[in-house]
Amino acid sequence: MGGDEWSHTGPYRQDPAAAFRQAQDEELARHDHGFAGRGIAEPWHDPRWCEYVFTGDTGTVLDFPEMIEATEPDRAPHPRPLTDAEVRAWAPHGRPTHAEWDHALDTGQLAFPGRAQGNCTVLYRDGLPVEIGYWGVTAD
Image 1 (cartoon, rainbow, N blue to C red):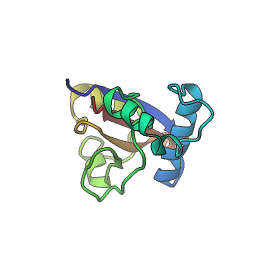
Image 2 (image 1 turned 60 degrees about the vertical axis):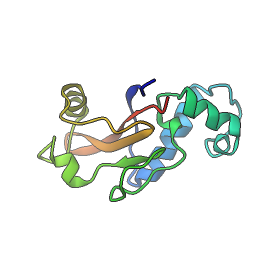
Image 3 (image 1 turned 135 degrees about the vertical axis):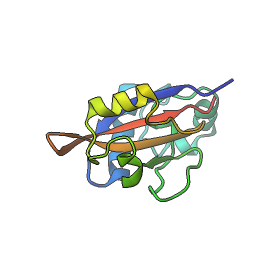
């Protein structure tokens, strides 16, 4: 089996880790995947959740327990924000819009990470940060 590629957006916050947690909370509220009534930190302490994520995945930010720093090497199962240089490789002005991000993913200018990994970047409208784009590959 190979991992499935996925992408979606979440709310912008200046702190990428806080934005990630908010995106997770919102996704869990939309679809609890059979783990109702829990905050996002709780399922990761449940072996059934870990089994669910690593064998079936959600194809969302829920597939990751926590975000790593942009300067850390990619490692599963953690998302990593892109560095400024990585963003400028496909958005030379450094402030990509949602449409530019979609286009970069669709054309392969922006690669999907390895299995059980994710990336994220801030997306802009009229030069202001408005959301964060997340994309990744499931572990299954």
